[in-house]
Length: 379
Image 1 (cartoon, rainbow, N blue to C red):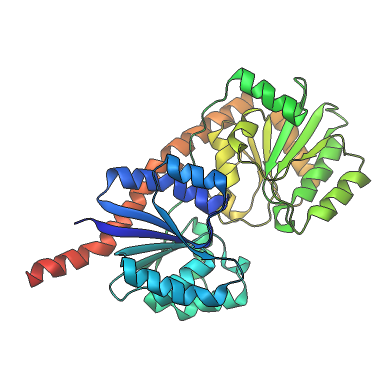
Image 2 (cartoon, helix red, strand yellow):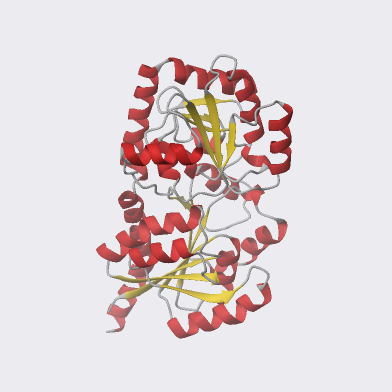
């Protein structure tokens, strides 16, 4: 009889975590003996994601809640677990992790995944993790730096294992598709396109990229910067800086896009000036799309992107160094090509969906093997 594997997530809207699950679930469903289902605490309404779930034949369900319906999570999730009786629950993100640990059946095994460093969670979420730690079977983290942040002060007793997030190997779009996309974005054939992907928040450091652009346009008057991401707490400040530096004609704030791989395919350099990240999935997507990467040398990114080998790193908020590293890419196509080749090889070897799915399958099997042995003994 197939064991039931249930993924629990806060919501199913376009973002890093849903994309990660869309990468690994099809492989696990097709190659393992698990009966797999995906559960969202909030109502699933994103038509793009619904279409993706149907395309990959992923079974999904939701509790029909809204973000503010915190008080209703416990009774609804408790009932859902009681009715469906999953053998393994794999939860992702704060609410899903904490409520899954509280509501799970006695016999269910729970694995949770940390997607960000501990300091990025609020006090109540951190407290929730500590108080429910004894109800968790296993914890994973998306990078060694995330793992370290949760382990260093000993708040959690469970060992944390690092399992990186997967990234899909992008399919190159046709020249005609590239031309159509450039026309849509108002990018000319002679333009140099610098791209950043991430919601416009202070921790993402996009304002330093804007300042670096001001330096670069003196040498590259045809340079353009495209930032793809939802407006956040730094949006107004960013727009103000763009206007102040008279860069409006050089910067495209295109908002959220579901065609990031296509945008990356027309980009000359990908720049990621973030202050803190769990892993930096956008960096991995750029590496998979064969775009030269320039990124801040924060711990989570430096963990896998080796300066001068897979990409170029700079000190966070150092505007002049950002400009210098971008210039190095633009002026040295041979170096850029070598960086791209090394980065793509690393994605293939370490971050591809099959490799990551196999690592999770190994953990799921370890969680259930003792139960199977007990059943054999009882027989």
